[in-house]
Length: 331
Picture 1 (cartoon, rainbow, N blue to C red):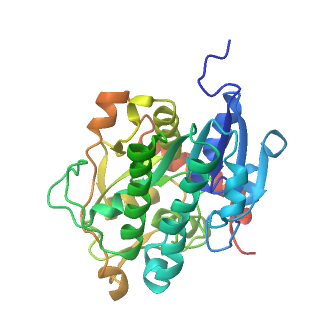
Picture 2 (picture 1 turned 135 degrees about the vertical axis):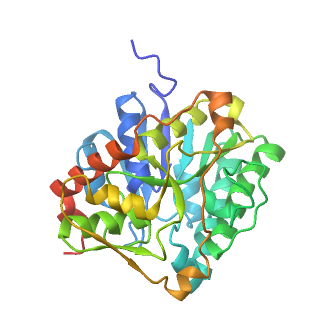
């Protein structure tokens, strides 16, 4: 007997043909949900139809933009859950094209929330936020009480999007919560460039036989979550009314410097090498230095813990791209 809270429920995922959205969709289909994906499929973002090739006949897809108020008003109707994952993720793009970042990560979030307020105030919304909004840490690990000082346009706009969700929860009673994601990686992430995560371009380089390029001295500390663990957290908070109006960090107990991470990738037996290269000035200006999360709040309140170790997650990811990388390159 399927006892999942998502069984038979209607679920809308914005950014649903992207990295995390497609992995979430696959899990929800397995749990018996009726899943609708909305994605703009704008080439510079993460949407890729290959991500959902194996579940295409078990879901509904709507190719539209979350900035379109008419589309969103139609799509949110009658949905039980909304996982709001659509966003512009590139920190560098946010600095070179701040208006587009504002439109997608802030203004479009108001469009979505207003659509819910007008057409479906009973929906439960889970918003994918980011650790980037903390900026350069005052202390480590970073918990949810840490000061918020974004170092780039992306962080500011993601913060606005997050707080709009909390405001609509608190003022209008539209149940909403947010997860501040750390470095999420795994199958279906963008690998043709570093717009989504630097690990993507690292894995592409490894598979293609080129050197992995590590900026600076390679001593920057980071934590990582395999996408399955991220999906676990999304499903957990989505189904929990205890999470309403709250923000939770995700993170890992495994903390590693980037040089050691590159060394781990090379040491997995797939060949390749890595090299230290100078930080590009435009990237150095918005680099946050060392960062890793304190995720004890979601562990204590909801029981979430990451399950997939870094080495195992990297192996799974590399094996996926060894088999499928042509589908993720412009060629």
